[in-house]
Image (cartoon, rainbow, N blue to C red; front, side, top):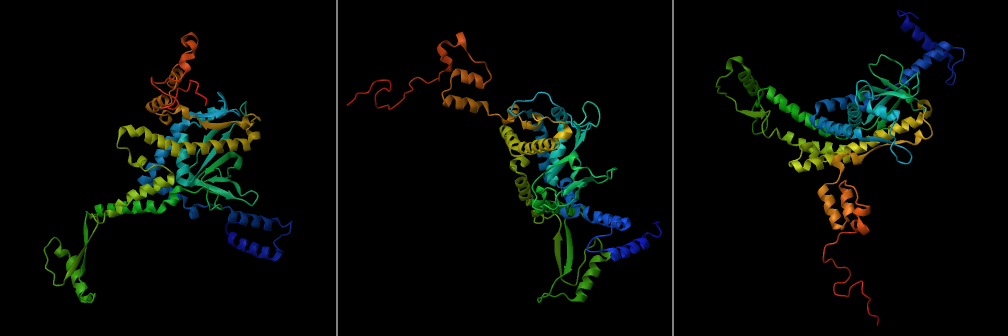
Length: 441
């Protein structure tokens, strides 16, 4: 089949296929017809969901809407900060001090540090509602089978190869990649927000839920920019309507001629016809559309699950710790738990390829929140609670990181007894002492 006869040959092939088709089957020895059918079905079923899912629109919204970028950026930074405290625990919840999984998370690849890697993962997860993590393995050597590097492809470049009922996803492709072959399922894992549109196999982006609010912000700013580019407030001059609401065509033509004439530019002009002036642009009343930006930011904070104060900032310095604590608890930690769970599930599904032992398959990843300062209780609150419960001196020392007083330093265990203020009374203040024997009638 030459390039000059391609169209004619395909038409002949189509006619021939129609002649030999019997109830959906072709003769086994007709390789040419079967190859044509295979290629045709491949072209029809191997589709991406960019157009229907509008993933490029999500990408553009993240790039052009400052509110969306600000919220997603803050969450991603918090995720990257908390990721430094991820620990690998065994089946007894005891920390595993040394393992290639820990080395991989500490240095995902040559270009991304742990901080940049988790920032990229979180950004994709919040922009597109999903994040694809490609895992490269050692092919030879003593580390053969172990993970060599982790990579986050941009979500707007990822396509999903659809399959059948038994294997709905055959793999993923990367737009612009020099490799035409799809990435097999065993070489990546997908973290995603549940999507009711399960035919696409992509996650559900929070930006879709706030799409109207994001569009409102963008339109308001575009209108303001247009007004500024046009020199501020502009005016439209139209002929005045008569009492019946009509404009005489001759009057409209005369006004248009007088106003738009070059010889009348920058001149005071008396018009014979009544006119109406409509100001447009950056008038205060027109700028009211930007006041709705606060409601749009509120909607974005709502869909991303963070308090609105985290976007607008704190008015008092002493609230900064509480704000960061809220960001970690409401956004960063839940996202890291998603990654940790998906990553370990991926390793367990491919345990044979990664050469994981039965013991290693019971490992799990957790964030050690005890190592994060902003998540700890305020020392003043701790001291107040200990005093209210009449804690012992040793309990107070342990709460502040001091060693207990034991042995000769704790005669009779006095420092393990509650510290009660003088005059503390137990029982009924109007009855007898609880240590005295009460009279029996």
